[in-house]
Every structure is written in C-alpha cells, then in structure tokens.
Image 1 (tube, helix red, strand yellow):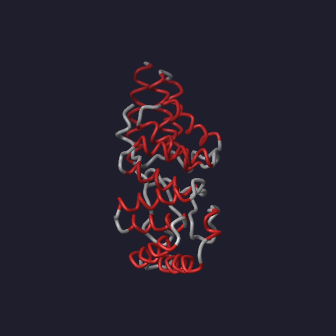
Image 2 (cartoon, rainbow, N blue to C red):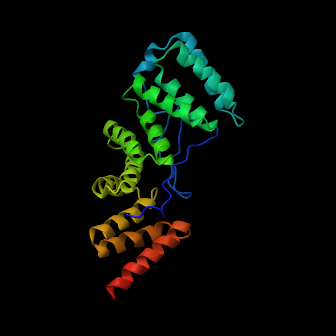
Length: 248
C-alpha cells in the first residue's frame, strides 16, 4: 500500500513533562491517556528496579526532575544529573527513560535511543521504554524495529492503545496488512477513533487493498466525519472520489 500520503511521524514533547510522551500521528491527534511516563506524580507505570535505588542515585534523579518540571526546563542540567543517577545505579530504569527523553530534547538521538534501550534492559517489563523506542524507530523510518518495540509494549499491556496505534503504523508501512488491521480494530472496538481518526483512513486503505471497496468507502467517510479540515482530509476525499467513480 502507498502510505506516503500519511504522516506517521510521532512527536516527542520538548517541554516540561518530558516523560509523559504525548504520542500523536498528525497535528490534530490528541495525546493518548495511557502514555504517562516515569517521573510524573500521576505516572501509572512502576519499575521494580526503583525499589533498590541507592539514596544518592535517587537524589540525583529527583534533582533532574525538578530541573525539568518547570516552565523553563534546564534540559542539559537535568541530563547531567540523570547520567550521574544511572552511573550510580545502572539498573535505574526510570532514570534511563527520563534521560532518553532529555537527550531527545537536546537532539542527541543516538544516545537517546541507547538510554531507552538501557531502560528496557534494566526492566524488561517497563512499558514506557518500549513506547519511546517505537516512537524513535517510526520517526527514523526503521519500521521493523518500530513494530518490534510497539509489539513488545502491546504484549506487556494488550489494552495500551498507544502501542496498537504505533504498531498499526509500522505494520502498514511494512505492507503487513493483516497485523495492521488487527491493531486498528483494537482501537476502533474500544470506541477510540475520535482520539485516533487516522486509523479510519488507514483501515479504508487496507479494505481497498483487500478488494472490498464498500468497506473502504465506509471507513474513508468515517474519517472525514472525524477530521474534515486537514491536509490528510483532502487526500482522503480524493481516494473516496476514486472509489466511488469506479462503482459507476
């Protein structure tokens, strides 16, 4: 399938809530509610490695958080504190994850990826590490790696719509329509297409590729109900016109 018209770039925030990555595909998509991250008081994710954190490493981590959770975050200073924290305690998964976010904000992409990988290695059940990695791989066009990271996240939490959202994008880009459709239907069946309207357009393309134009038409129309005034909407209208023209 031709996915070039779709923006599957996923954005990382560069403001104060560094470990609440509001993953979104396209400018109008809303940030998912299940993408909280380490370091936020409302963070729903817990790493078992945190329990064994030495006092000095925890202090460095908390100092880094304070530098980030302001209106004018000191990202470079926070990164230094986080490097100190993981230097003191190599299995500090939440510190590695926050360090990855800080490095992203500093455009240090290679070392950011390494930090997220270290977070996953320290705690293989720490969901945010895989979500961050999936974002990075999608942004860099490494779709197989993105599918792997998002797939690991989805297996850890089958109800994570963020994971399924990125998994659908990766699989579609790899022309793996069956797996892409499965992840999209998880989102649609949860009634979350308003938060992720892009999946309706994607599902329309999948149905068109499968040779079911009526289903494709239905999905394209549903997308346009949800997102009518974007660049993507213009492209979907053209696809819809092409499908309807073939039926005449």
